[in-house]
Length: 239
Ligand code: URA
Image (cartoon, rainbow, N blue to C red; front, side, top):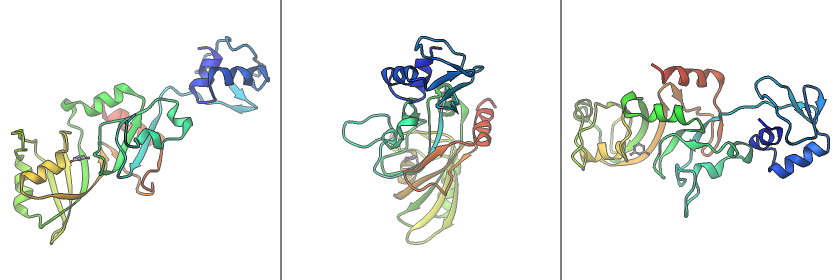
């Protein structure tokens, strides 16, 4: 790969900016000053430094965001802010996209990556990746609902859902619940509750497969996955 492409891919500016860095003598490859933008490097093997700092090359980026409400799970939108708009430039240069969608008003765990294969496998209906949500419901949630969800409920378009595991955390005028589902139909959690005559008034995703929301992330904050999180995700999807 050309050195100017590698540095530009990593977010060190445009090809033109990077050319200037090279010209200014800021870049070394294996301790040798490199000024030619056309110089080829092997990012896996060569040690590239910028002003003395070693540059880590990566092809893929894996981010966990605590999605805030009011933001769209997309890469671009004509009206609303998107989750990608919330990323720092140095992360956005990898052109990542959200893995699946959370509604505009839904909060919580969102994986953002540029690894298309991983995304595809996590979203594949055949994989049945479980997703767990916390929700507040506008009325009492009962054991009847637990049973109904276990058997699958019929949505407004006639689709019968796969079993959902509903746990009542607090039942009352407003109920707190957790629901695990293995599908990702449009507005699925909201529509499952509508199927039993109830309304979701707050929704937050807690987990997706082995990946759990880091509760220390404030709404709108994100971080890279840890090595353990990434490994469990990559291993999980081949199961
Ligand atoms: N189910 C919904 O209804 N909304 C979401 O954002 C996610 C799951």
